[in-house]
Length: 391
Ligand code: ADP
Image (tube, rainbow, N blue to C red; front, top):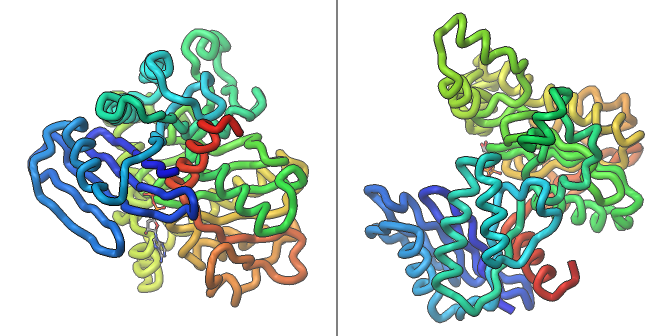
């Protein structure tokens, strides 16, 4: 079975085409700047990379061109779409039909930037390939197992009942995939384990995964809550809105935009690439050192909180760009977690080698794992499982 995975943004479509027999990647690429000047493609297949600058006026023409480029790699038997927000309607991937599209559309107020873009991609692919089954895989679905005390905010109850204002959590496909990988790496059934997964990329989130289910996560109503991120603030006092309105005359939209785009690591030290920040800190830049400290301190607080929430911790898992590649972030995050019986092995942490890798000391009561996330493969697997009814 060949599965095409699509991740449609407002002006881009990322794609990866899998042969699920051996889970090999047949082709992959991205269409960029759809509907804008300078649009084009990057397409990779069989080890060769091609770049095309060409007009791509809309998602439908972008998708048609992807199908052409896949060419002799074959045509997809199924398509898996990444959809950011499934609200509390979707606890699992679902085969897309007109009704599913309407429900995803009804969730637009919860994800005004992402769901419309995801829908545009879905509609382009559904129109073009009518006989091919297509599946929506939601970023929020894995966290639907959170109990109310984790997903509710302490705000007027009618905001929840009337407007759906609650914590949803994101990066769920990654947290689910990585926690299964962690159980496999430990050689234990997921049902026995209490894990904290730190997905540290440009966006960053922590998840508490007990017995294979998400019981808490750091992102909330939107992906702004929680950990310090590349350009997002993570946890702040919600009173900053009133404060900045009164003190700086900023509008709600301006504050919201600044918290999403000009905050986090970038707000603290001007850079949001962790490699650059580590270099700046090593060269004595105090703001970069502070940014690094704050990033790791926040992550460490969540690990402690989630260990308490689950009544213990069997493994801490680092994943995504920073989690997989930054030994320094892992070391700083774990520094202080000895209180949980967790002990990092400095040499293993510095050179984890091939992933998955264990980087704790032989005496550590808590395993520390570095695991490569693969959201596209996870979506492809979920697509197959959804269609063959095994999920
Ligand atoms: P996204 O959320 O966009 O998918 P990624 O998971 O690709 O992000 O992670 C991007 C982040 O990973 C960037 O901050 C980048 O600096 C960081 N990163 C990549 N390689 C390294 C490295 N070798 N050391 C430290 N950070 C790294």
